Length: 167
Image (cartoon, rainbow, N blue to C red; front, side, top):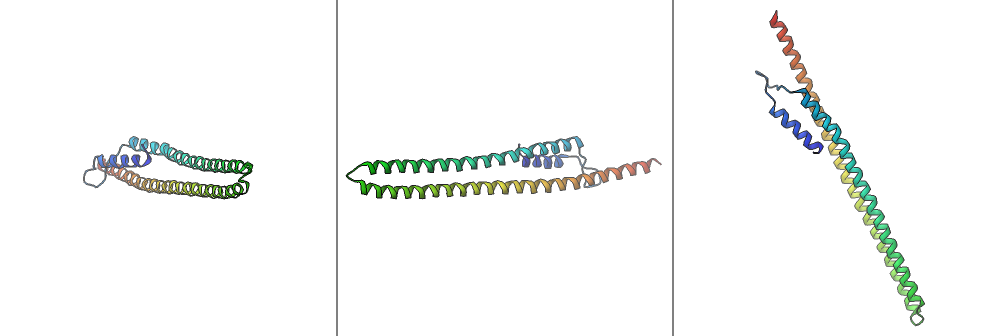
């Protein structure tokens, strides 16, 4: 269950609460509210850990791209050395090896750039999700805080009314 599920659960709970007669207020069980708030506090670190896993995956992708690029360069260098060692086609081999090495470096550079772009996209998406989650959490918390303040005020008014009626 993620933070948004908990927010939905809280909304469902509010909708299921009994109405206070002759008002648009509802009666809530504070224990249920505190439990939902505790669950929210516990889930928020999980969302952050998920973002950290995405960042670690980014590092793995970049490392894999670098290793792949290095392997391509090494293979190209080995092929170039083999071509040079053949006496009959020494000049041609050297020229072809340079072209292959240049292509390998270009491919390596493109792979690295692609990996960086992909990692940047992932980080951007995670950042946007984290910002949206934080904003939504703050918005819901503010609504909840306002709601609870109103409920406390209603309860206080009801108690005062009861005390006045006793007299």
